Length: 443
Ligand code: SAJ
Image (cartoon, rainbow, N blue to C red; front, side, top):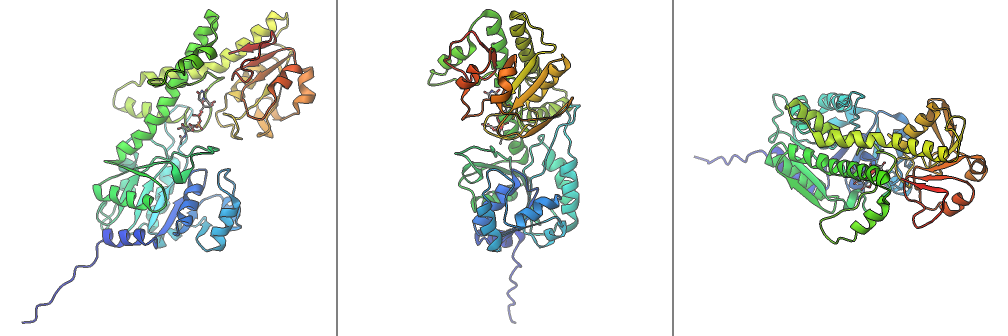
């Protein structure tokens, strides 16, 4: 009797692994912001056909026109990849039906009540689920609390013929994009990835290894989610520590900047952080509260995070008090005084004002009746409680100011020239390090 040799149909694992290894997989990226667009460009550069999906039509149009709106992504690269048919963008989620992989890179803001706003992840997954099919790899990259991938995303993508680890693969991989970093960009930042099952982890690692220099597989999505929170909570707490030390040293008449520089000579076991006017940005002030929110659900208070959050949140008040005291020493009231702010971005050499302490300080000063102006070469205008303020030329505004306040120490600015044009400078970043003058009040 003829022995019929039944050859098993290739599994989803076999098919997708082959597509990834041969870079014939069609890659989808949902969310084309400072995380999604660089990722899309890296995979397109690696030879994949990449489709970006974003709800904002203007972003879609700019990418398809060969342009870039993300500071670390060159328009030249975008144009070459679009012209070469490797990169396209759309606002139509139905393209996911043709995709083999999908990365979710949407925002995860914190509500005012400091609990996570998961609406972007949920709405993205609702759209993806309509077109999700066997053989796909899905990876969540948005920073979130441990458990999100398996408690929120997995149920939305699973189905009768969609069993995770067999019919599809689901991972979490923390984004580590550091906007403006001249040395570390998407391609050469080690990429942590953890899957719902070992097969998922292996597929996620294979995916990233086709376009990025180093992949760090971990045993689960929760480990991968927690890695990101540890990284950024570490920073937030250490900044809080050094801010508290700055307040202590201020009261004791000790130069905190000299203390930190000297401590920094320790070749091991120490990492310098620096005091500042507060904690800005879309990561550090936000991410740790995802952790504290989740641990609170488990009945554990994340006291370090809450305390550091409180201390960092107090720094704008501390700076305004220093300005008020400095004017007081010169027999001048804060009310009615003219204060010029130098630098409003949340950190040096970027143009982002999200959660910037400068906005809090300006609000506090305006509330106390001061007339506030600012200059920041990277930020043309800001919205304040008293309406829109536009960046002004320090050469014109400084001579009339009663006090200049350095909030963000952008490089390339001649701070000595600033000092020469005013009678009083409150320096919250030690931008005038090494300069001795009665006119300087340091944090
Ligand atoms: N800050 C201080 N003192 C410090 C360091 C920072 O006051 O010693 C302030 C900054 O002025 C800013 C805020 O903290 O207002 C956050 O600064 P950051 O240097 O942490 O910059 P971010 O918010 O852009 O953080 C990003 C993070 N990257 C990701 O989450 C992928 C963070 O993990 C990086 O370590 C950080 O960039 C970096 O090193 O530049």
